[in-house]
Image 1: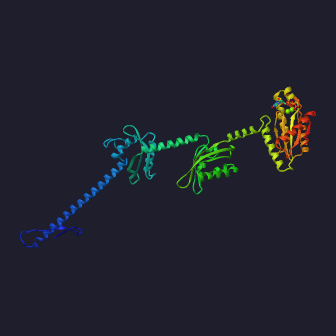
Image 2 (image 1 turned 90 degrees about the vertical axis):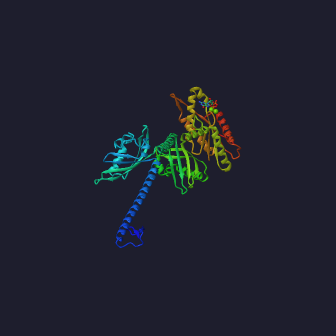
Image 3 (image 1 turned 60 degrees about the vertical axis):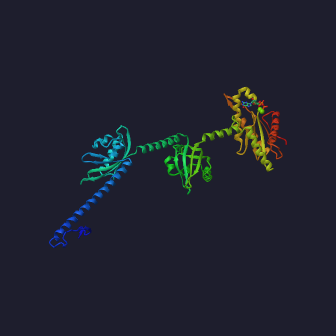
Length: 488
Ligand code: GH3
Ligand code: MG
Ligand code: MG
């Protein structure tokens, strides 16, 4: 007969053997049935036990696998019983600190003695906050003392898994990971960043990284502290809005600034530009920008560069330029510059024959005597005094130059010799009216003036100057303090 389980599935077949060939009599039947039922119970129990054992074995294996995985990842596990003040550590946890499985006490109070003194306060505060359910979980990074006395950085994370009816924590389970190597790496990285920041902040001017996206959007991905000086903007402001720079660039230089950057991006050529900025505090200043572009995979352009203050250099350059064209004593154009102006005027006369230009040569009378009588320094004062008078009489487009020791030449554009004569008279009158007073002594000074006009037939600027010089010669010979016009 079949042996059936409680669920009526066939577990096996029950067979009875007898020497006799008789079928089992009815009186034996209940006994046989009982034996079959007992057998089914026994078999079912056996099957259940086997499957439970199997399940337990599978569970155990999974547990071992998980434990191995956790241990292998350098993670330790802890299980804290808040009420009893006990904590249990996994062997892996102990291994992180260099302890064997049998070492370390289970007291929570002992565990806190291993936390670095500088970290203990925030570790306890984080734990407390989680106990009071102010945080979803407990997660801190802190230093912990190992068996050999050295400290390791660990990341500790945990969660209360059971609380009493009033919400008080009973048990908490968590993991601990050794992050010393990661911390060392991130420390090193931070050190590199600090080094770059410190160095770039020490460099005079602004060191920066600028990125222009393919869609035209631009941003400063790095600016050194120098931006405060170069543009009078904070690093935060410029990181927020790169366009702020445009507001401080001199309006006349903004187009050049934009097009030079565009050209640099298009050709990947280094960017160089000298431009002006107008700043709230410093006013008008000169800036020199240099940057190297490169194209990134996303089509954007990234520049690394620096901007320096070249205001002083510009000032010196323009001063040098002035020295090259200016007479230092009188601050008037020197002979070289004056002659260049003469050539320009002659070109104008030659282009349009109706253009009139008068050339005057002025020479102080008996200047040697002034030097000899009052000294060279007073002689210099007289020269400067005369230069001021001449300049005051000039119109905007006229030119005066110191062409010799006490010789001054003047170009009067669009003026006839007769008008030039009137001008010369004014100069003489002015000089007579304002004598030089030095050391309480009044020094009378007079000037002789020769006038000529430029001719379109003149082969060079020297021609008209030499005619006015001849006229001057006549003025000197005529008794000085006189004006003579050249007879062409
Ligand atoms: P004249 O009326 O004929 O022009 O006589 P003068 O004495 O003015 O002319 P002269 O050419 O004999 O003398 C010019 C003097 O100007 C000689 C020179 O020492 C002096 N001189 C030239 N350059 C300077 C200068 O930069 N400073 C001073 N103080 N004197 C100068
Ligand atoms: Mg002279
Ligand atoms: Mg003279």
